[in-house]
Image 1 (cartoon, rainbow, N blue to C red):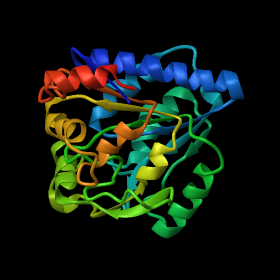
Image 2 (image 1 turned 90 degrees about the vertical axis):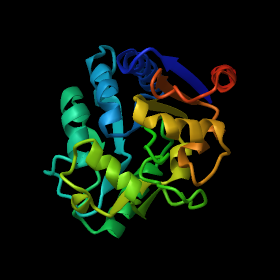
Image 3 (image 1 turned 180 degrees about the vertical axis):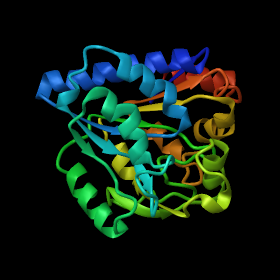
Image 4 (image 1 turned 30 degrees about the horizontal axis):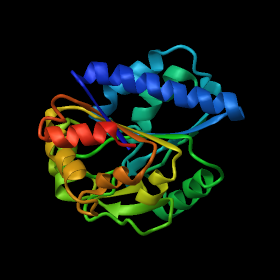
Length: 254
């Protein structure tokens, strides 16, 4: 794992996007196509904006998978992750192969279908974030580190649901769904490369817990430390609580 800290979220986004482009196009050059997993949420705004502005990616050769989705939420809802990726990535790039997750369909059916699709071949790069409670995708603490299922149905904890309200996706806690479909931790770690985009001060406590504490199901994103090709992109605000020793050690590790 590598950790990189940038002055602000805009510089971070540009650096992460350039890295992502190299990985995507590298896979296309080597194999003719690239398989990508994309996260959503407010923390990914600048990154996806920067990525879609870059020239040189053959997006028609990209197969896109969604990281997670709320159970019961229509795709027309402003908080729908399917809508988010359609608006911020798919429509801007012309991606043809997009495995969206239908939150209104039977969750067990959706999990089976998208799970079979992602297991067909290696994922080249997964874009992820880290939640305010340390979650990875919608794997809230205590996360399941053992399941081998590629996608699972999970219950969302209150901290996760309050984050969604705080980001402005819902008008109040009661409006936030209590269940979601999420890529499992083990499946995320199967990706050849992982790019974690984690800006802003509200993520600082989770960053400290995940990168200074033990690798633990209570800090799900801490498991990224076990991945040899994971790169964590922080800004000064999200890295503010990390000690100089931690920053030095993680910047040099891999």
